[in-house]
Length: 347
Image (cartoon, rainbow, N blue to C red; front, side, top):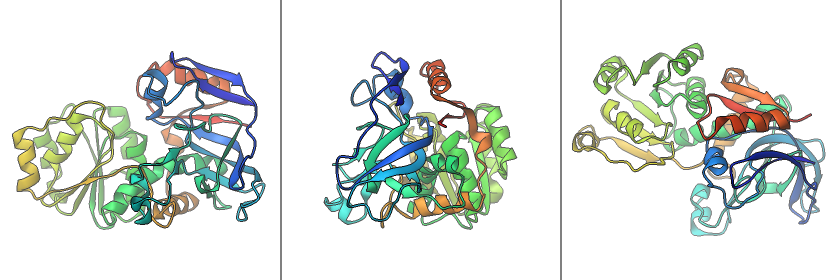
């Protein structure tokens, strides 16, 4: 089978590899249709951040069941499925409480094991979410990134009636923004330093947008005055300056959900730290995208919103193509962030 393989020197190659085989009773063989590149994959490719090399990445994928192990009774060949990449142990104290994202003994598809950037993959039954019949199979590759923002909403006890502010209008941020709209947010604001992304956010229905490169925190705060109460802020950019910005622009007793992963140390000024106290902010750490019962309400909500066509996905896609063009698109990043989702589409 064709597989997009990453080597330690940062090279992206399309290689012929043996098709995986079912080994255990709870295994499922899946024929991949669509697989997306995640921002977290970029350091695995270009900064020697993978657990081993060579490796086939890919944890945002959808496809069809080809075969199942003897103990899998609720899936059959031809069923459409999406990857649920985390495999918690299900037995530790965290898992017993339903805190699956916090399991310390987890495995992860496309990171700690081979992923979906290939024609076939074998995963455990727990790593698959059955897709509704009405959903286009390609949309299933977006469920995992959609659930990232939905998990933050879950931790914040929902976004209905709240003034939602998205700091970072990348793929995760724009998906979260659309979910907030669909789930009844009172207003949705997008903040970024890229004018093209802000234009896209506005076209997708943002109530208002702010460019934090040309506008100070005080200026943004002034623009948010009408919607300064009942705020839920999602920081999705994962940069020290955007974390500080999220705190500085927050309204009284706002919830600030920290979603983006930092790759640099964060130092808060005394004034910014003081805002947490003086405005009585609630800081929420949001890690991955799972809750009980497994894999969680986030996955059910994502599938429902996609089936009801509440989310626009096409404007978020920068590239879609076969194995060779997918590998070329990844290689051309040369370690830089994506400016839109890069997708592998297999026949």
